[in-house]
Image (tube, rainbow, N blue to C red):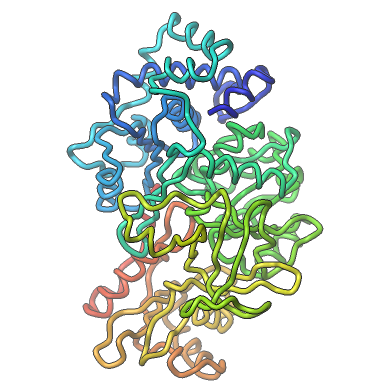
Length: 525
């Protein structure tokens, strides 16, 4: 909050937010708009301690988040791609009975809100803010001390570094969504470290099209709000044509995205459109080597792969210009420390030895909302157990090899799903993601592998034959009848594969052979 106010008063007329079809908003205008909205929402929320937001990256979403922060409320950006059950769980866990959204969004993307949850429509709220309220908000934004400003917005007191700033719910792809609790200090520390690592300055301009319920989307939101980097908003990261147009029109310099979305941009954006980019940073899923090569060939720019987790607010490490090691996820950003330990006995691993990745730093979460048991499983002595397996090489670059949870125990042995997926894609020579490996219960061996795929059924015999000669252990080989074709792989709003939905489709297809035509589709818009 202090960074938001300081930035607006230091350079009030500098551009902060641009949304296509609207007049660009200065820093002061954004702050004043957030103040006016916060004061208006006081009557709507009736003491609800959190401010739940159900919106894509947009001016309304930015103002709602900033208003909630000024009002001292915990921000909860809801994932609109996870389905009704997970949505209801998220709302119940954070105690929200009212949700800030927009009529236009609900009309375009119907979302199943629980019957006992009331939508607060931004169009109606903003219409109720008259000239007098706007003038009062502008005066407060310009002149009021931060403590007084926050009280005027409904906060009991000025925000402190260890206050809870936001709860980001996991996708629920591996179970019920968990609410990751991040403090103001967690967010501020990660933003500061990211700015220092990537040498971001006020000459940079960033595209904000990752959803704010995603940890990297949240980072971009607050990077613009407090870090002074202007944002250009885009609601749909799948719209590659609009991405190319916005980057070219606004001469954007930073693109933070995922490999899934990058594949679309490689196919549909022109080199001229992306010419202004100076930093292209990707995370959330493994960057395929072919994609990095194709992007550099087409656009003459290298992709900087990074690594982060929601629990780390989110950035842990990133490759940098001049220090980019393909295949790695870079070195730790400033103030973040890494350890790699044996996942069974906690022994420190030697350089190059694979183990469990642990993270420590001011960015590490406070814990999981209402789940002390789950918190105790991953936090100990200031270190966060990521659940990711990897190693650090002799030059300090981190390499992630797989998720601990993406293993199956088959016949007493651990089988990594990622290794099998990579072998399938090599066998096909596929550049796009066309297969996802999961497991279903097996009465004899505990579990058995199932492969959801989008490639033609007639290629299954070729893939199966290639896997048997690829040098994989026998336990790593799916059975011939374990290949299940779907129209498309189910994706989350972040672009990652929805692992829970993959498992559901696999189980229903194996148990009911007639279900093998089931299409795995993303749940959001």
